[in-house]
Amino acid sequence: MNEQLAVEVINASKRFRLIKERNHSLKASVLRGRRTIAEEFWAFRDVSFDVKAGETFGIIGENGSGKSTMLKCLTKILRPDEGSVAVQGKISALLELGSGFHPELSGRENIFLNGAILGLSQRELRRRFDDIVAFAGIERFIDEPVKNYSSGMYVRLGFSVAINVDPDVLLLDEILAVGDEEFQRKCHEKFAELRDEGKTIVLVSHGLGAVENICERVAWFDHGRLRKVGDPHEVIVEYTGQVHVDSRLDEEGRTRWGSGEAEVDKIELLDARGQPTTKLTSGDTAKFRLHYRTERAIERPTFGVAIHTVAGNPVAGSTNRDGQCVPEKLEGEGWIEMTWDVRLVPGTYDVNVSLQDFNYLHTYDVRRKIFRFQVERGDNTEGYGVVQLGGRWQIPGQIGAGELLMR
Picture (cartoon, one colour):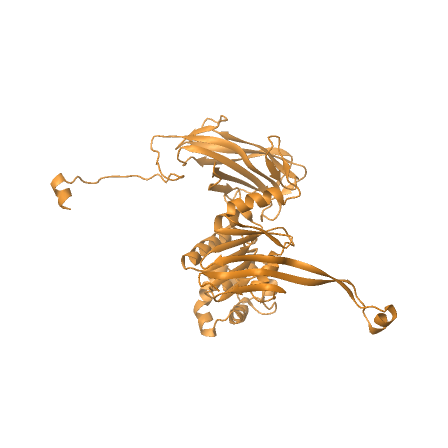
């Protein structure tokens, strides 16, 4: 295996037997004259990809596409029936809720049990214990049996143990879909820290926005086949445009998708006077107004706005969940607004919008390139990059020309 690779999958396939009809006794076998009837099911077939050491790699796809089975093969819980799967270095994994936990034991006891399973000594676990508990945020409940934990507490503790065993390769399945804003922020910060340390992360998730922001490359699994590996934005755009059975064209011929119980009908950009516009000046204050419509009451909806360059590069994004402005319920028609300071350098930008449930697991409506606007030069425009940081320069004292040359 190449030393520059952390994961190498070559023509791998995994097969299961699905029982169609079972003989439950010897008598039934004799009388019916046949054995149990089963059919083959290939979870994935002829899959090849690699993950570079130190890379953050995402795997996306519909339910049943083979993503989680692939992760189980990477951890050697399962073995491929054909081909090969190789992982180089120490592995830590969080593949499902509460994996490796004993429900009758306390959180404290499970830390030592789970840590030992992952290869840490008791001495090392005692040294890291406070960090594990602090990251999970369950100090008050650490001596309670984990069977009394909520699903969020379960996954926070499991993730905290997994990342604190100092792995070379970290394998995660749907960790981004659970937890509150604070925990998800800590996850993103930890991912950045692990990347800086040269750790490899393989992440399976339905949270496409997070995958696009975190991962350097993405693999798309489709009914057990590997459809594409490449740039996160490109792969996600192709995935969302082709695999959603509920995708359709809007009135302008652009693809949108979602279950449709709630939709974003249109988006307006309002200037500082509250007037609709398509042109702003750097330094302005403006609003995005999202007009929505619902067929039934929607609980705790999450609206998202993402700004991209016309080349498709992500610039910035925000949700009302990030802003802690999530209503308990929406019904009928109305709008929601996001106010922002325009800190973009002059140029043309596209806007994507989304409407999902609170945990980003159910998509009501997604519309890409729903709106385009221009940013014009302001008084103090920075000329490099995309986002202005408002840099301020000053010269506290003047140095003579002779002095300057000597220095």
